[in-house]
Length: 252
Ligand SMILES: [Zn+2]
Figure 1 (cartoon, helix red, strand yellow):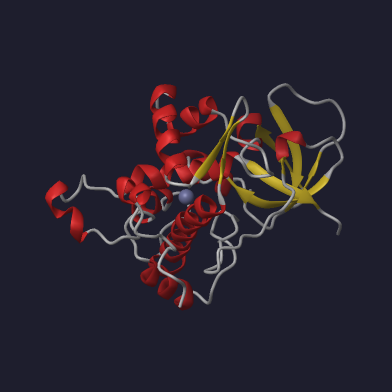
Figure 2: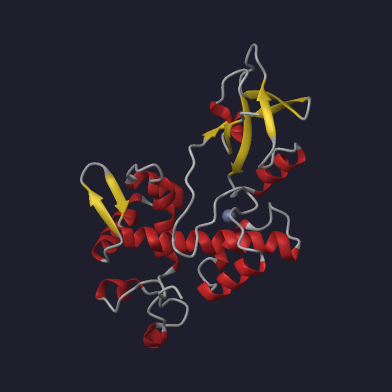
């Protein structure tokens, strides 16, 4: 068994336990492992912004979470006090090992929920993100582990994102976006951004899903468009969509 979230009976963490849903008088009944929804959202956002070893700036975090920079500053102080992140003067913040473990737990719950909804409950891939945003804070690790086991321990979610393991490791890959490609490049789609349902529907309609190989057309580039050949047919992919599609070089 994994330790239940690895959280200690520590003042810092207790301060981060959510009391909104049940009221302060029920505080003692909250399991020690629970971090509040907003703390989990911060950890997940900072993890996403600091992939590749970068530190995340206050303004990037504010933009990612759609909140005011002033509230980010306040939360950063609380998270630093709780030992979940480090504040690097003039450079932003970086998660501690403890913070990264917590972020990976949230990502694991999110991505397994999405996979389960698609594979077992016939949700379409554009319809699972909002459910997962809610359930990532609510589903217990045991439930999520059972869902993963029922699915045969999948390594990637329906959008191609790697699912963190129970042990808290995650696959890393050097991905670029389709928008960054050069004319003539042969690439394969590894993952797509999962937040925008409309974008996902339009990608699916065009066959732009993980695993698909495509070639960027050589020749004159049309403004705002990435022209590709997919399955032998030409396809014009709008730049904003191409920026949401992560690819790797295709060696085949
Ligand atoms: Zn999602």
